[in-house]
Image (cartoon, rainbow, N blue to C red; front, side):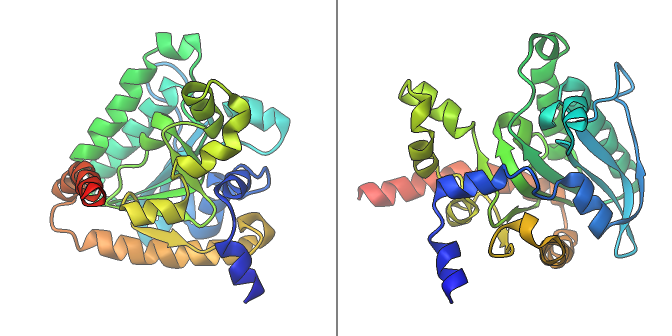
Length: 279
């Protein structure tokens, strides 16, 4: 009971801290724990390999799937190689390539989202960062195979949305998903980055907030101290949630039309809710 109360009373700022926890499981760990026969595919076939997107073909309970997601790395050397989970356009073009292959061979797509955002550097912009993100959204909007997205840690900005257009979207209990970081929000809105903790409460970025708003479809429970405190329990919970989500997604007669209605309908729901509140 005490653990449940503590989890329920956890503040948005505390959940942001847990989402950013350095030892929290990432895409590589989830793939190793939940999938078998993973075969990594590299490169965007245009420029280079971007290690901040990890993806390939695997089996999920014996079913072939395409799985991909953001990778931050563990050691400092790996952090640098993966650009701390901030993909450049090459990473998003690789994601497009993998999703198109999934479409060709009829494989469901599973994505893991854990990034502070796409890399905003000059080289990334020069190489077509915005176009690469838009390309991911365009590819996902047309996929006729089911797509399940899971926000496992920090889901920031368009860099996260680029892998997030799922028929079913799940969030780990202590993950966050927002248009930008709390620090960026506070800097833009209040001209004061030190008010980031206050921004966490205003932004409605927690899994609980987003489930209520209808942005996500389910929350995956974590161990009381966070996913990093008991990885086996976190893996088991996500495995069960993914099984259910894939079964649900595979029953959809037209996944592309379903995603269209789902994401187009979000704005209408928000407007209706605002109208009710004003009334």
